[in-house]
Image 1: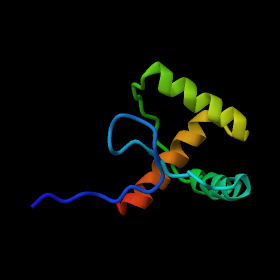
Image 2: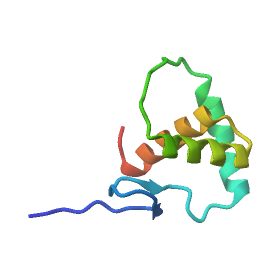
Image 3: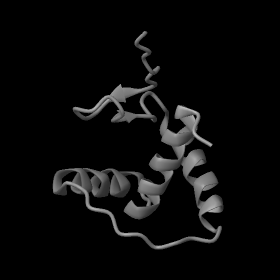
Length: 89
């Protein structure tokens, strides 16, 4: 039997797991999420290296600039919130 995962938000890439978890969120709501993530970011961190398509990195940088947050912070926020929505522990 084939199962399907519930997707929350607008898909933004060719893969089923690429969706915008902030679709429909007001800027104020997003800012609240960012502030909460910044508090969480004060936890112990480990540097990693990751390869991203240039276009995806540029889109991320532009969105981070538009929202007034560092792009690496935005990447951490998106990753954490996406895992939360998928139910990953």
